[in-house]
Image (cartoon, helix red, strand yellow):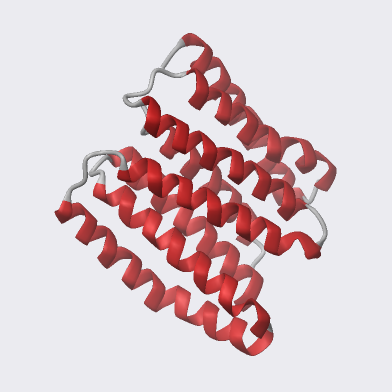
Length: 210
């Protein structure tokens, strides 16, 4: 980590905390600034740190940029939800590319596969079943997204790196909470849980680059 990276990381946490507070109290106007700003500064961290592999960093930065686009789309009207979904789906593909460029452990990949199979069985299946009943036109996009993010998590486990595994797992938890809260059962703490795990997950993936 460079000095600039540390400063930008501090700003990332400052805006993330602001967004968490705004999410909990319902300050939408504050979120319009804090939510994208968190990713902007985190992208700055990724760009300015000293990575183990510059090619991996490039793929991960592309994923972060697509995540930023997804964040913006999801703050807009409902009609932009699919655009946000597609942005994050493409972002996860970029993450998969970056994670697959690193040395891979078969054993840890199998552990990751077991984790995602369990999560799909417990949460994913219920989400897809509910979507099929209430919004059948969304079944295809939801399943496609579920497959891609699951592949990203397996790829992260395959690196055998604690930062990558923690980051991807938190991202998985964030999207699972978002899907459950949106399609199955809304909970008061849901939006906050989504953002806390999302931001920490993204930070973990960036930390893996060092």
